Length: 393
Ligand SMILES: Nc1ncnc2c1ncn2[C@@H]1O[C@H](COP(=O)(O)OP(=O)(O)OP(=O)(O)O)[C@@H](O)[C@H]1O
Ligand SMILES: [Mg+2]
Image (tube, rainbow, N blue to C red):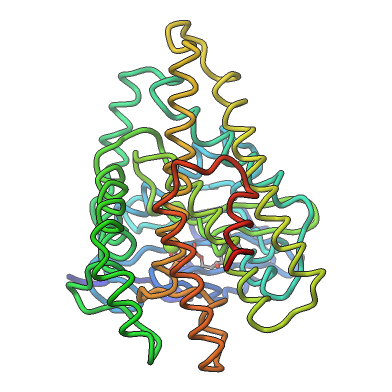
């Protein structure tokens, strides 16, 4: 497979020759700002401060240079457009897409900061639960068969089939943490027996994870972002911007919700591990409770606001549908917590704990929490159900 990567200079020339976004007499500077494992992200700025961002998908994965379907790029920009329509202003605006070069030219959202980094540094924005639950409210149920035309849904199912990226999730999230057949898990030294007993050999857990995996593969419920961790959410005092929907496909809505919820658990555990002050710890807990509660409330609202076809308004069906969705959300919240702890793609909150004893404690607590959540996901109704489990630990 040949790389289709463009250099910084080629990108600069490309922008100068093809777009009149910048004034002709202005000098342009291009810098690479990407820090991900998959693609290349550049920012071009002129001397007045006007800027745009270009994301390029190479045919080879940035981290390992193995081939990866470039159609992910087409999917990403199309989903950004759909999300911007459903939740205006909550994602970067796409200015242009170059289908031959796999280049997305979009709004520069550099005035927003990476949510994961902000939470690690103890900067908690009070609007976060409202903002992220609104994103989930606006972008999920409105893409399902309950709301959009059946034929349009099936067209989209084809367009957003994303085999390579789903394959990554099916392996790294929903298989390997429990069944390490590719030998890619990274287990903290000293935790091997614990992981063997509590993850590799727990058949009841496997049964529940397999149900979640089967649902991920076979339940084309709605258009999901597919990688909605806190590094895909950017934030400032004004609001949030969600980036990077390259894993998007028609799958279970609970996968996105569970990713958001699960990733809020890491900063709390991180601050407990490093002994941050109690106020910050309470605030981190509060963010989890409020985000879960507001999400559940707004999913109900989204159901009521968006469904117009009378037949779907059956009360028992509504209760069943939402209960099932919330149960899935807790389930994928649990799988996210576990895979980021023992899998090969860890979160910073875990990696930053260098003291071995603290790290062993942290890993164990996260794995046990993840398991409890997966196994009891049908019993949970609100955010406090999760923070109570955390406090029990
Ligand atoms: N529209 C944008 N405006 C400003 N910065 C951006 C924008 N898009 C991406 N970035 C920056 O580039 C980084 C990488 O972007 P992104 O996560 O989309 O890339 P990726 O290669 O798909 O990453 P990953 O390996 O996490 O999938 C972001 O963390 C952010 O700092
Ligand atoms: Mg990405």
